[in-house]
Amino acid sequence: MKEIIGINHIGIRVSNLESARAFYEQLGFIFLMGPIGPEPVAIMEHPSGVNINFILNADTELEENILMDVTEKYPGYTHMALDVDNIQSAQDSIENLGIHITEGPITLPDGGVMFFIRDQDKNVIEFHQKG
View 1 (tube, rainbow, N blue to C red):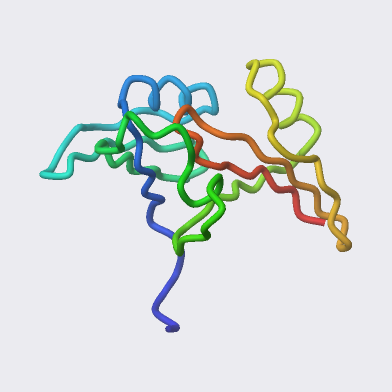
View 2 (cartoon, rainbow, N blue to C red):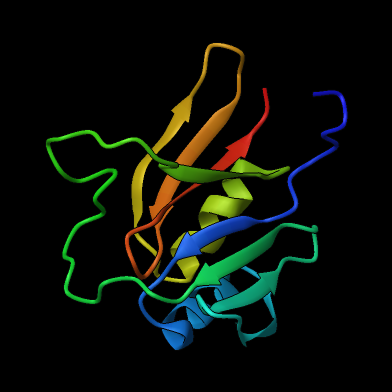
């Protein structure tokens, strides 16, 4: 469809607004509003324009990310990838925050580099520098 001009927001199911907010604030996201609506939803946005909607109804008893950590592979979104202009600086920032890098850095054939972390609910976040 030629009418699509971008991504409006990313929806992430989380178990607790306060812990999600604290984690994503470390990455520079700013709390805008919420919870609102019947689901309910809270909204954060990064100065770069990346907008996240937290869907506040995850099962707090789950120990694993059902899309990434179980043998059966269910359909669904597995991660979000955030573009960065300096992968080493991003990695240093993540490490200085005490956030564990779960995979990478990985260098792609085109020279791109990426690494992965997980948020407080085990949702996967990729940091990606284009080659």
